[in-house]
Length: 85
Figure 1 (cartoon, rainbow, N blue to C red):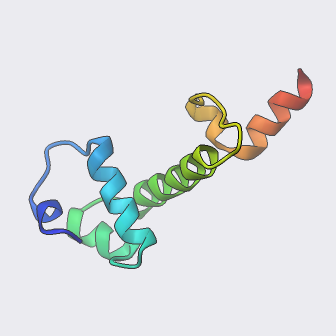
Figure 2 (cartoon, helix red, strand yellow; figure 1 turned 45 degrees about the vertical axis):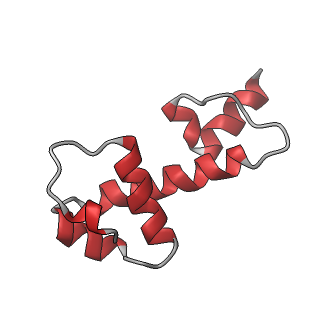
């Protein structure tokens, strides 16, 4: 993980979360290592990674969906909602 990330944080900003997620996706660290290093629950970090993956998938679509409310980040809920309309 980058040296700037090793400082103690009062708050995890979106930019800091994105850097941690990128480090995990690129294999520089693991969820378990980050959890121990930053005293965060692994479930929180796993959720950030999943949200990041979904955000990247949407950004790379030919027709990206507009910014999705959090409940629509889960594909099943989004698809069920669109089918009902």
